[in-house]
Length: 195
Image: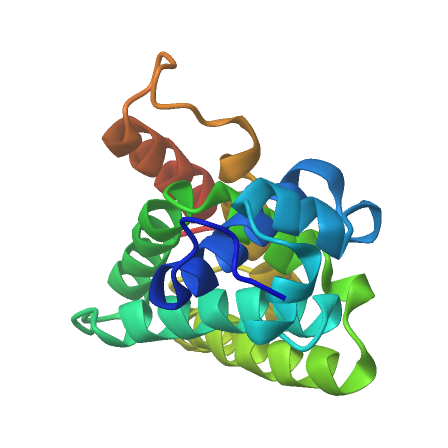
């Protein structure tokens, strides 16, 4: 089968992933076919299999790339001194990182149910690594009396859910700047953990 005119191998792979991410976020993984992705990229459907074995692998690759980028960016942050500063740093980092990636965030949280068991386990391990940092921050603050939480693990999940929700409503054209949103969320998180 001939390559579609204008298709170039080095450029097409990233375009396939970008198209899949956009379409999965818009319509949901289950509703998107490989033919739709191919049409959006501008290649024949069979050409997609040069870049991914199947739709499931494509979904997993998108989630894995998101988690790898998240963990690498978080690891590059300067460590904070004390649990309150660490929690503020985590909060602000999470908001900044995720605001630029609403489609990736939507897929990472809403499409977990569509991963096969081996893929789910691998993504869940990466998520646990990231969320485990927040749990450790809250545990340290709870031990020292800096935070007042009933259950550290529940508090960590609640904070993550609150922070991640920003991508569903925030728009750069809205009334609040990104800095203002960071500050609002930090104040809400601080109060939620009794800091």
